[in-house]
Image 1 (cartoon, rainbow, N blue to C red):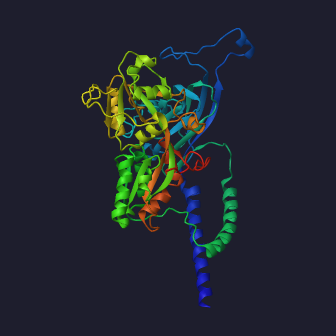
Image 2 (image 1 turned 90 degrees about the vertical axis):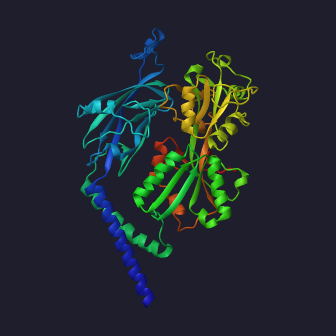
Length: 512
């Protein structure tokens, strides 16, 4: 009798909790509202000779007004962006930039048209980027097929249109971005009767509530909510992955509080070694350590458990004095083994080649050696990166740096330099050019087709399986949430498991 009463009370409390949760959700959705910025593609068309029959007797060449350069395969895309919610969106609410991507096309120019209010155009074109994007000029940022909008205040009903001049043969338009307490979404232009929707949804959820209470009484809680646990956690390793992991950790702390999470960018091998050594000496302490690695750990770290998170694409970079825009893998190998020492020998300028590399702890370097060179990089021969002051007899002039930022700074200051980094990392360095490899530009689409070879999977590694009641376990669950995936996409990473694709059986298949 007592057991039956306890079960009934449990069911009542479960139902009450679900009703309360439903009420909070309805208030948030229909009364308090969320911050919503929507976009809609109004125009996406090629600029061509019309009628088509005239193409037999006339060619159309479009040139940019700014520099007179031709725009092959020119097209125009017009995208409307507006605040579609009932809350103002502040610049601080835009955690990752509102970004438009045009696969297989390059952005050649951008203009803001039909702003409302009218002063919004000047705000957008002159908005300054935060300290997270050092060196970026004010206004929209363009790189390759991507256009990023600077964080701005967009008040209720504020709107504008982006007119983008593009070059290439694609026709797709994609968008992403992350807004705290809201979302960035496509405008489907569907009108909804809020009263009917609320009534119908309430009836539906009332029916589901009964079934859910029954299911919960049999199988227990689903564990789908974010687990907020207190404690300390140290995450260390990949310098390429550390910035976005720091964003995810900060967002977990804002959501939950009470979690002290430290992110240290000291190189993939250093992070793996630290977690493995901690676990060997004190398994309990290892429950508060997590390693980040560009690519899979070697067999020396057999005690660690791999968790693939996302795909990262890397770029080959050169100082603009090199005068090249692409290399084959064979040419890269010839450069790094010393058979080619001047850019003129691969179609560039008469400038000596200098190799600017990462240290042996770097996962990015490991990916470069595995996927491009097929061997290890040569030994360090230079301290100053200009002369062979350490080894005058070396075949190459090569120096090393422990961080991505210091490597990029050196490439920008060194004539004839070549190096590598995460795709897009050099966007703020005007003296650095991102070059094609085997004729392909760095992009997740070319990686998925098997055309572009320089990429890796970002892994998180633990010492064994962490206790279920640990902050480490809760944080690993949080990395799989939509919030974390929004941050990953916003920083240029492709989640291994996302809403529209699953790469776990292909690119993200765990390898040792």
